[in-house]
Image (cartoon, rainbow, N blue to C red; front, side, top):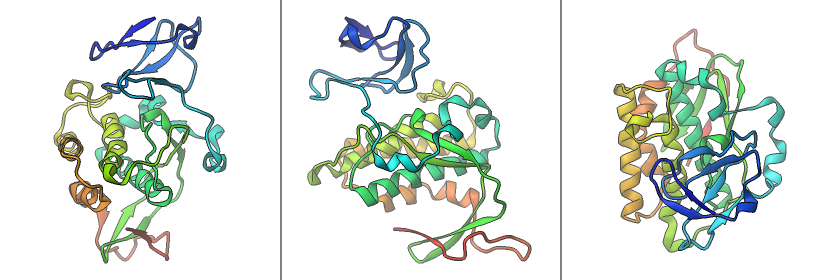
Length: 256
């Protein structure tokens, strides 16, 4: 069976047995666009469409690994399923993007793997009731991140893989993919709720710079991404706390 991406018109040869009668959510392996094929699906995970040249060809996410067992999924919500998030002010959205990037980087740092499936259905959040600031240290610099109503976490490690050393640039792909969730559809992103604005342009610039690094196969280093994110960090962080500000963590989170 041939399925054509409704976004980029790329065609894929798909085993019809993989599509249930009621239809399901699928994702283009070329442009990453996600849509419902046939009848609207209630299935959570998208079907990933890949080129024949890519040996993955066509894959469905496997069962999540042990690392996901500590996440209370029943009390969590997918980023893509809550439109209210996108009605928040820009600082909260930038805070969420910061959390998403840090969660990816943390996973990559400790596992030495790429997630390889960073669409916005694989980021869950729980409501955060803490008020105050989190202390971070990066490159011997201290900054304080204000709490956000949402705590985000990375989920579903069924497609994770360890890239070859000479291909470390593929680590950038996880960040490049999910950043589309914060960019309006008319600007090449996935989001139908956001509108163009100055802070959206900042996010688009980050996406474009990541794309250049991938194209040039630049050796991966998270410091590069953090430098790209400095306009965001400056918007949502403080260098010093005021007298009445509440510090949540006495032991700082260290970004390395």
